Image (cartoon, rainbow, N blue to C red; front, side):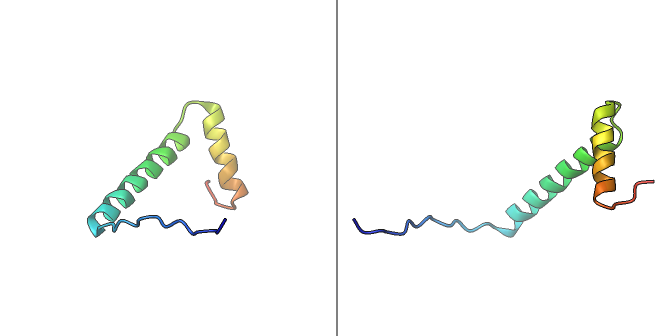
Length: 60
């Protein structure tokens, strides 16, 4: 049985679509950072705090 390569169709993505995706991803990231930074849930805040320190990112 011969091995054949499967070809997937590549659809072109317009610049405006890429910009929309980039803005959406940025907003999601900002919301997650805001949520973790100002969360009243102590476990969420401490997890984000410890992650910042482990990545050598100053937070104080």
